Length: 333
Image 1 (cartoon, rainbow, N blue to C red):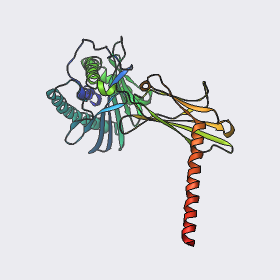
Image 2 (image 1 turned 90 degrees about the horizontal axis):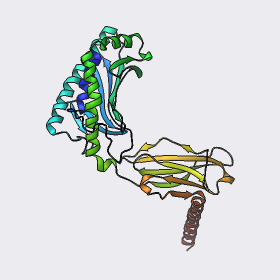
Image 3 (image 1 turned 120 degrees about the vertical axis):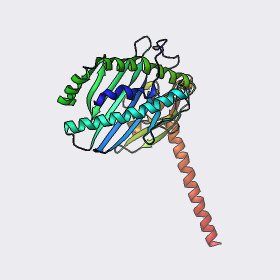
Image 4 (image 1 turned 45 degrees about the vertical axis):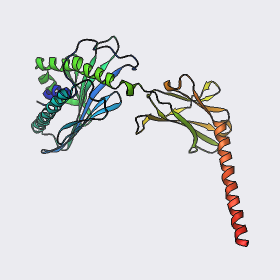
């Protein structure tokens, strides 16, 4: 059956069990911490399927999967955690075999339910750790982007979006109690062990501090007599950061914060803007707080930015005039 292969897929990045300290989040890491495996399967017809699988530590991708010849891609030097090469090779072979079986099971259901091609299935599975609490394991499946089935408290739960098919499959899967115990053990014991191994092996990288760079610029004018003030912050790590437009010590409630975007080097970029009347721009500043700054906020004043802009404009105009004068003298000489 389709989802009976899920515990095999989860075994991609896990090894034996280790009860000792499995709930202990290492010092210096922001809670909660999580590891998950995501697979997207695109079935184009009855003989062609495309797959994309990846492993994620929080929001950082740590693993990939190469379909042909079927190998794990370790994206960081520490992505192997504390597992030996022999263990990793066994898991790679095991994952490849179980993945093939999973695709075959999906095709069987597609034929039985007469699903129309093309269609797509998604699976997310992993675990999350909170200090002093039991690990939280999860499996979530989707069909065509809509929730289908999930695994909660040692049993499968159908989603309302999954309709009658999800209910039928839920009842069938819940008949296999031994299989449910296997899934629960992988999620609550084995996955946390691998997660802690990743945190330990990648500690130097994951706990690094990179100072942000910040600068100001005007954005497109929202209307006559109005300005958009933009504060750019880039190159910071870790991701949590506080950026606000201020007037003195007063936060400006109209501050608009975009989503944090990734840079190619693993750091992040953020754009924060504020729409104001042109006459009210004087006295405003952008303030940046980040763990790498040691309590010393970055403060950029719009007045200074404006004065620098006018100085730059004056220099450019002067250079243009001097070039024009030189050309006129040369021509007449």
